[in-house]
Each structure stands twice: as structure tokens, then as C-alpha cells.
Picture 1: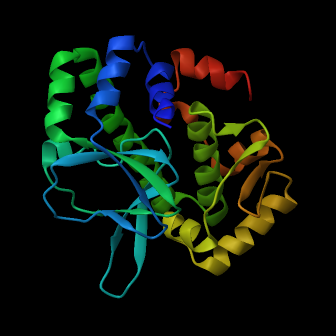
Picture 2: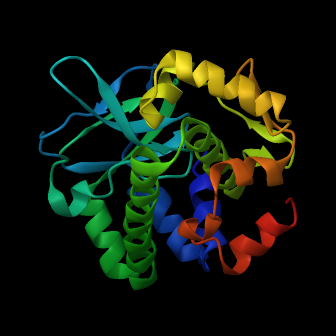
Length: 246
């Protein structure tokens, strides 16, 4: 499953056989976790970073009254906490939303990897910059987008990101999230999410049912979201591949 990580790297640049071999050797352990497992606890010093091989992880913060805000989703191929390599701990929790398989990469191995291969250091730096771009777009959703636009944006973003690693096609993608998960991503209530999904279906944009997102009209979905994929930096080879299915 680490091939999805390689696909993500290759989509935005070259990846040599030596680099691929070094990444494989940097993995110290493979872990399997159930849904709703805290993978990286907030404020706990980390000596490794976590590469998601399969499933969906989220970054989140809780309030004392129990309300939760998910601040980003991670899909297969993503490092979920690469930031801990330099920060040493995270100011938020990382949790599995679905059953997940994780590759554990010690920070000592990451240091050796990035020192030996400067191009990989740039790729992983890009990855943390991309996380920041995604956070800004989610902040815009929470602050200014309508309820329909928030959900449409989330479904549009995931379509692009999952296609990049071979987990989506023009027709849609598997998404084993609950309406509660979507509500916590978008700052809405479950009732609002249910209403929005019904509205997007009736407008002929998208259908979310039985753990699958079916794209009915991508242009309509993007219009509902005011979605502009440029914040995902899918230019070059990645952009050309995505253009072929849109």
C-alpha cells in the first residue's frame, strides 16, 4: 500500500529507485488500527511520523463541552503528522475515522532520508505547505461558505485527492464516513448535513449513500462549492492526469 505514497510523490515530481528503496527502508513498523482510535495524541512528544497506507485519518480539536472540529482529513498516501518531525509534538489529536493501516517512520530515519535525498526533503516540505493551503480553504468554508457549499467543497476536494492516489474515478469514490463525521468537518449539525446532501442530490450534483460518493454532475458540484482546485497545487503531471477524467 505504500505505492499510494509513491503515486502522490510522482504526481508532482520524479522519484528515483534509490529514493523509493530508501523510503521503504525508513518504515520501522506497520500498524493496523480500528476506527475512532487516537493515532497521535495532542501535546505528546513524538519520535516518529505516521504515513497513512489505507483508510482515513483526521486532525481534530475538542472543546470542553464535547463539541469537535475536524480541521483536515488525510487519505491514503499522506503523512498525517510530518509536522511533528520539526515541532516534536502536535497541538491537536490525529484519529482514525475508518479502520486504517499505518506505516511508522522514526524521525531518525526521516532525518537520514532528507539529508541523503534533498529532493525528498523538498517534497515533504511541499506536503506540509499543502496542508496549510487545505487548512486555509477549510477556514474559508467555516467562516463564509453556506452549508451546501461547505459540504460540496469537501466532497469536491476529496474527489481530487483520492483520484491522485488511484482511489477515485470520474464516477466517484468510496467514502466510509458518517454524517456526523461530515458535520464535524463542516461545522454543521447532523440535521443540516442530511438536508444539504438531499439538496445536492435533488440538484443533480452528487449522491452520497451506502459509503460511496457518486458524482452526478461535477460542474454543478463545483459551482455549488465555488470550488477552485488550484489550492491543491495539481499542476504539471498531476493536473494533466486529473484533466483526463474531468
